[in-house]
Image 1 (cartoon, one colour):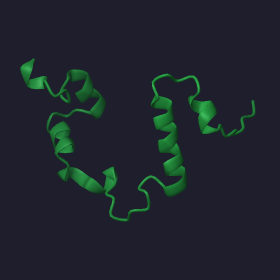
Image 2: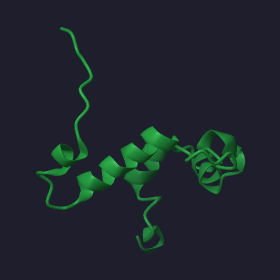
Image 3: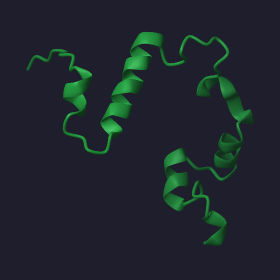
Image 4: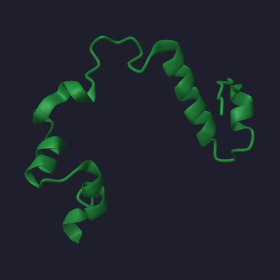
Length: 83
């Protein structure tokens, strides 16, 4: 099976979406396509550049959790303390 890339105009991408969410996604993708993920700002810090000093990474490491497991257990839920 062969595959090919076929660009879709933004209006065709969003025409059947009453929520406007697809327009939002389309605009984000257009921005990234034109300016790059960081918008060309050399001072943007990417997740891999943060290291272990990231508080969320420290918490997950302390509890030996992956991000997925943390979501599933509710650890990332703002009301976790109420459980």
